[in-house]
Image: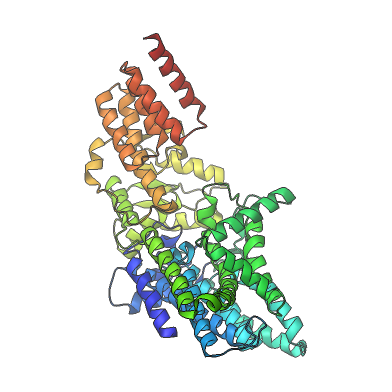
Length: 619
């Protein structure tokens, strides 16, 4: 059964997988780091990088990004197959929620375990993160593996090794530690110095994968975040994410101590967690918690969930009401969802026993199976990404925009990582100089080494001085661009050019070189970010023509911006301004109303609408 489950889930993941680089967060960085055996963004993720290199070398088909996406699908399916074994053995062990087992009940156990694994496999978090080049499906595999060894093998030395190794993939695995410590204190009565020493040694053996970072960094790889070979301090700062907030996901703010905020964040965490399932699953979760609450494993499971879920979300310090927070936090739902699915499985089994007394086991199984299949069908329309090329298209269009020997100054992560994929994995346009990470000392050192021509010969003492020098020294020397017009001060007379802004704009025909962004499934947050780059590009070219009173041209670009992103309130407002200038106050008012629909708190747009309506009343 394990192999059937693994193969089915793997094939679904494979069918819906991104065909190349995805827009998802740090995917491009993970691909480049794996392919070049480099140091990824903190904490370096050495195990992921090493495994990614193996997949890049051994998979004989597909582009580089596809091969490393495939690794996520493999480990995602392995995590789900192992979860099936965990659930089945949990039922078959001598727990109070399965007091006695006959053949019918054994059959029900297998079905409930299977259905709950499918529910977990096709939640939006697990599914979407098993089809991109990210480390979270591998983290799910280690999570299930540690819990399985804990409950059914009871080998603490093996757990210590697996925990250390798993932490070299993703450090959130440490959130299982409180539950593991409780297990040791309650179950292992012979806990002594000798055992502590053994656990420490085997944990260190697993954790030693991090030695890859300084060893490889000393060889000057393409990707070398934090330069961990430079000093012990650099190495420690990389593995502890010191420059990025450590366990916090907001590096500039300390965890809140406001009890009302803590309660609100905990509520929001529960809300987004249960939204991963259909509504019919929620009673099963509650019933499963009720069934297990008197068992010896409940408190261990609860501690796993508590620290991996609510406590982590509170410490991460991201406001869950912010639209950017949930996409960032989505990967961290997977660990607590593993615990939820254990409770859901227990609830499903015990409820099935009661229902089957009235309608029979076959009808009970049919109903739960039908509900699970409908859940999968509903989600596949949202998650399927097999025809989505938008991140690849975006990187190609960026390169079409940039003249030879350009500087791209301080680009966002999406821009940086997609271009690095083009340069380092596909060997395209290495003449483009990516000026990134210069706000750190190691980033400054790398700039001096990789692009010495963009810096003066003297040493620069501060980040502010470096930022000012990079602009002043290069503005008239190279074509200099940014992906955000606000990053370059107004005194440098920056103009838009396609997707970018710099000293070599404008060219309205540059858009003719672009292809329509190719999207598949529902546009998720990071896909919409790239869509916004395109729509903003058209909108800003329209503003240039609007300033020159070339309204027919500006209208064309504003309308194209809306066609790409129908929620771009600025483009509606700009069209309203155009028609105001043309004296068509009715059309102006209509566009201002559309702008308010997508930006209801914009006082400027409301004032524009009021003025247009006053003009209409005068008529």
